[in-house]
Amino acid sequence: MSSAAPPPDSAAFCAELVRNHDFPRYVATLFVPAAERRALLALYAFNVEIVRVRDQVSQPLPGEIRFQWWTDMLAGHVHGSAEGNPVAAELLRAIRDFDLPVEPLSLLADEHQFDLYNDPMPTMAALEGYLAATSSAMFMLAARIMAPPSDAIEHLARHAGLAQGIVQVIANLPRDSAHRQLFLPQQLLASHGCRMEDVFAGKQTPNLHVVLEQLAGEARQHLTTASSLLAQVPASVRFAFLPLSQVRADLTRLSRPGRNPFAPHPSSRLRTLWTMWRASRSREFTK
Image (cartoon, one colour):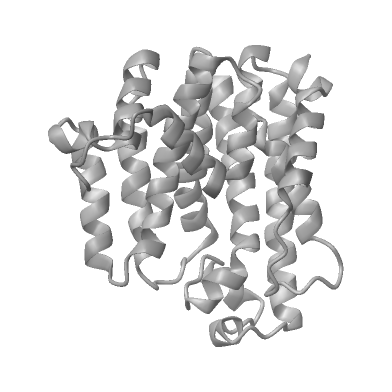
């Protein structure tokens, strides 16, 4: 990682990074107090940095080196270059100010090493394990910034992350298949007679639609569970789960009959703002 001096305002750097690369999470931070917002943006900027590694390297080894830098930094083995990296500086500040556990952050970086290779996701259980260590961990850490930890919050975070992650797998199919990378579980494809080569070729087969419908059903179940669990956690922590409103909207959009699963249809920023603003004023997140 670069050891150059950080920009004058590392917090603004993180905010811009998240705004450009993870707009729904950026919008969710607009509804929380300033101190918590800064920490959330640091956490989300770290996630952006980790997720983007796949697109910034052409071979696995440079990607592994980047991941190792982050795990070393979190373990306290990187000093000068950490201070010169605005995301690392802000993340270390958030860890200190909100007593965030380091282990889930390191595990998140480790889990994303899977992204560097073209190995297929083998089973649904493997996908859920991957998403628990990435998407669910992000919800759990965001919640730690907003309120003290509890079993109820961790339970909610797990289901929220699984719902969000599965929806992202469906939404990212055009990009992933073009790279011959498959997050759709291989076991699930095989059980419905869906060939991997057909997916990589962008073929809209009936079997693929069945696979995607089953995945959407899994996401819907996790989303329903997460929504019911929101009422059991303190109101102060609920805005950490505000991105669920966008997950719900995305799932509805991705489940439309006749949709081409290989055609990207991202939600507009204006629609995302509207979705999150409405959710922020709903009973689900405020009562």
